[in-house]
Length: 309
Image (tube, rainbow, N blue to C red; front, side):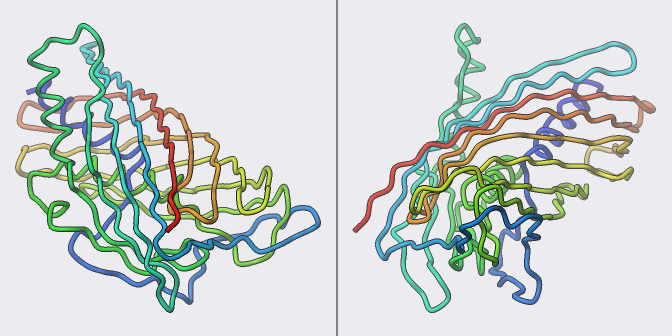
């Protein structure tokens, strides 16, 4: 029972590093009355607006690599560490101009497991088979020239009950934070700082996330940003009736730092980020209660090529 419980928490906690709430079967328009960006510092002169200028027919191909190393320790000294990883080949576009901005499809054309050398062949095959579930998962996004999502809808493959929801959430949030940055409404210059806040939800847990950006360099329509991401969850308890357990959060914190090269003419950005998390949880089940502490380190890297029609 304890191994199953730890595995369940590992799946949960690794997701909370980079996940986002996502409505899987609906299209939701952004609330124009609430600006998602808070400008902290407009930066130095000269200042100019930052706006996406994506042309009709633009297509961006990207590779996204994600790895996590997780160590879970229980109060009776049992420990388990795993190092999962995945590489996603993603195509965004071709872009279609709308009266509100730009609309485009995003599709995972191929997913590959990052299999360490020397891993048991049967386990390696299982990891690859799990990764392939993500093949052809995608959806349609419409955003305005500030990168604010006006609508988003997943395709039928993404709504499959066999799809690992945790991984889908991870992909959605990582890409919204690192690949399609929401830009401030005001003109800005070098050194400008802004942030966006959101509440993430998965399996009933609620986590507050803050994405903080700093404008480091700008050359034409290409800008360099530094990004800091922080997550924090207040104490809370969620029941899982199917597993006959409840998980209480005593502490759930994560932080990441990275760099983004944002091409305002493309549909995706080059980005790299790494971070760590510490979670202290209490698991209660038929066999009693168990304390679990999670320590995690993770890395995300995205590289892109863009074609213009």
